[in-house]
Image 1 (cartoon, rainbow, N blue to C red):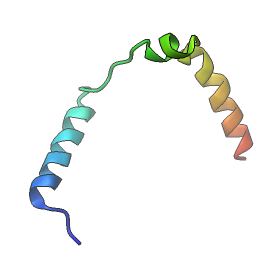
Image 2 (image 1 turned 90 degrees about the vertical axis):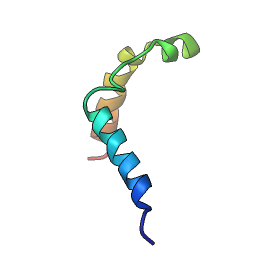
Image 3 (image 1 turned 60 degrees about the horizontal axis):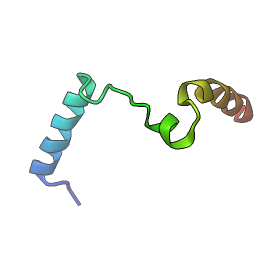
Image 4 (image 1 turned 90 degrees about the horizontal axis):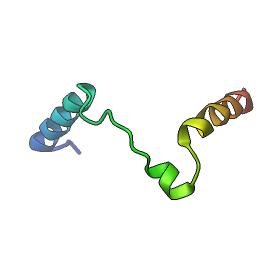
Length: 54
């Protein structure tokens, strides 16, 4: 089953704008919701996962 041409064109356009930085922003939503900073949580999480999958 092939993807309709119009839908493929829309996805390609979205990919292009995202690559140009359209969605390149962050918010404080995680911290407001959980009370914890995502920035502080991410490096230890990534380190654990990298050693765990080895």
